Length: 330
Image (cartoon, rainbow, N blue to C red; front, side):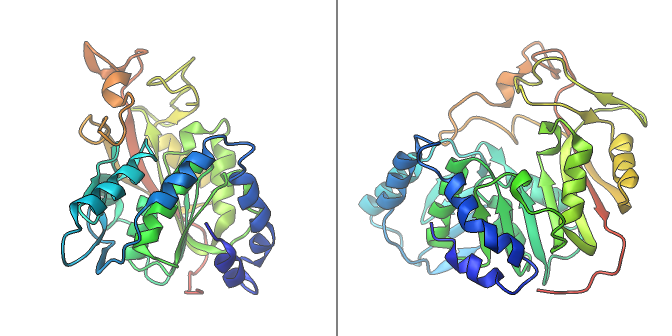
């Protein structure tokens, strides 16, 4: 997991300040002392067979690497077994040489809902906050982004990214092992910033939105996806205890409230792109994520409620822009 090429690329650019910190941030985010499972995950990386893809698919529902001829059965089994050691796989799906990684989330459905409602990614530098193993990062690259930087503090997801990257070989796509708090203040270096499935985990949602804003160049676009509730301007749910068995859920606003937060912070052109109730077809247990999933988090007698009695997960996608005229830079 070599980040030196990225550090070198950023030197002398708008991201040079981050480049100066990145080596230490990576060391901290992938510390074997802090994360006892890292040696096991790294061993799984070493067990991946050496394969060269004949074709790469970044614009299909399954981000994929393939060869013209099928792999020998023993090689495919070696690949499947090594990837399985990186369980659980949350965001996807992926297809590597005939091995279908059927992730917990059908993340392609979310991409389908937003892909044609956002500004073109052609020629843009993109930040994806809370990206997991990088599924959407590769979809962004497939839609023309010049550089895609994902960040996620969970080391397993970062190792999963490197397992996929071994075959997808996209030197403009990176996943960094760090949370949003470690991104340098007021970078103003990204043309599009995505935050999907993060806002409701923040004790201070306005602070998170401000952090995202500070990453954008003038005229850049924010793409935000988060849990919401039905309601009027000003309505917000602050769950007591857990929400859908998650202990770190804080603010679930109405969509009008969410848009007002963006205006309050100085965003413009705020738009509600999509609202939908999450289904057990979109988020579910699979052989690649065998733990409990959405069906276990809902009231068994009334699927419109969580197990705690709150409204079932409803997700909204909104976009907004920073004031100014956007021009290509990277």
